[in-house]
Length: 110
Image (tube, rainbow, N blue to C red; front, side, top):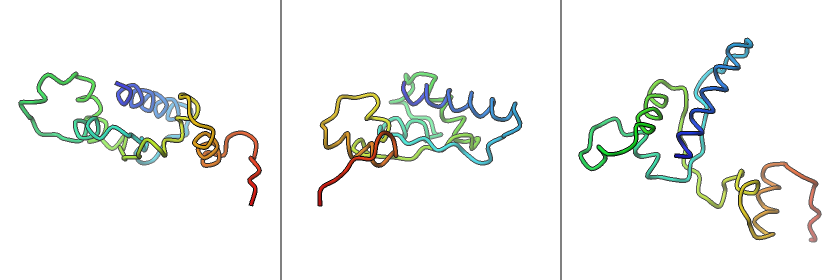
């Protein structure tokens, strides 16, 4: 469900940017760590085992096919947004903050 919400927000932002004259060229890249959700969203064929899947994945699939969004896999350890939403060890927190250029520059001892 998080992927569906993210795609909806991206589509909303793309439309807002278009309305103010700053249309985005190309697809919006979404980094996802759930390979199962990505497989469902990218697979355009019908499979009997997935016929019960929520309509939200069909929505995501439409946006991928129309090149409005692009899904790329990123493992959980490198998800930069995690430091804002999860309790992490101090080492992981420092690593993700450094990678995202957020917060004060942390001094490291050599």
